[in-house]
Amino acid sequence: MKRKSLSRKAAVVGVGISSFGAFPDKAGRDLFVEAFQDMKVDKGFNPKDIEALYLGNFSGDIFEGQAHLAPIMADSIGILPCPATRVEDACASGGVALREGLMAIASGMYDMVLVGGVERMTALPTAQVTDALGIAADALYEVPMGYTFPGLYATMATAYMERYGMKPEDLMQVAIKNYENGALNPKAQFQSSLESIMMSKIKAAQSKGKPVPGWQNVMDFLHDNSANPIISWPLRLFDCSPISDGAAVLLLVSEEIAHEFTDHPIFVVGSGQASGLPLYSRPDLTTLPAAQKASQIAYQMAGVKPQDIHLAEVHDCFTIAELIAIEDLGLCPVGKSVEFLKNGIFHRNGTIPVNSSGGLKAKGHPVGASGVAQVYEIFRQLRGEAGTRQIQGTLSLGLTHNVGATGTTCVVHIFERK
Image 1: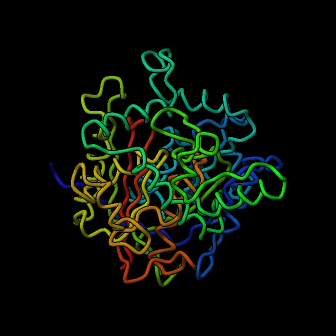
Image 2 (image 1 turned 135 degrees about the vertical axis):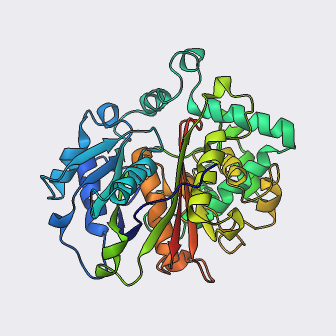
């Protein structure tokens, strides 16, 4: 395959993020303003110099009754009349918005663009949100069969179990890791470890004079059907990312002017996007071919190999998705992600930390914003600005992996601090 290249390089010089969670009193534009105001650029910038906005958003028309979001978001932060474009690629919308902004700068069209993502999902009941998300699956062959995304990813999980001998308890280890990371993230939807959640439930039962659960450890808690109900076997509640409200932004500029904004820009050195078959017609349910292809393109563009990556933010919409992503990205051999996880390789202080932010699982998953929020974490980590969750050691290369639906879209970016 011919190596793809950028004719003009670009760098991230600032990032911002809102709190993730449920905010009934905030509209999507409020969350976007919060993220924009959170963005601090070392040497400052003039918002009026932003030449375009690329906004990731999956379904504002359904979730919030508001279509044509991009110009509204541009107005809310005072950057009109710059062109504003909404990018929709299911849960990969934010990552694809970054790729669109990157290509706009690489083409020479612009020198400075704002990339953002926003989703306000919690205003609807859970059943309606599930249906809204479901339209990202194949509406002709999957949705009429009763499939929801928990069911689709449960299908992938059972196929993986059959082929590689994985057990439901192995999936629980992904959740435990990501909740521990999320507990250190002040912007995360869940800022408690699973052990802390378990203990809070025990204390609540004691204070109310109710029967006290007999959990002896976190695994007892996660096996309790009342505390962690099965959603679609083998996936339980804590295997599934939450319904979330949130927004994230980043400022992307051409290489030539990057040092006008900061002495420590983070360069986008690799970008790959690919599409894949719907799950019902995929010959292998234990991999996302689009993720493999997108990562190959990104690695080749960056001139690096998987073993060169120092940390990764991957699309863990369900715990099985993280394990498959790690293998698709080449961060471990196929079928070995559980073994590597148990050995601590992907923990925050491991060899290749994965989802130090808490991932979609604990940080939250406002779908249009998730891909941009991944970049927020990589930017902070590479610059040594991640606070109590800062990964130790020298970090220079980070990766983001953002998936739409069951892998019908995947976009991968590689970032470097030079």
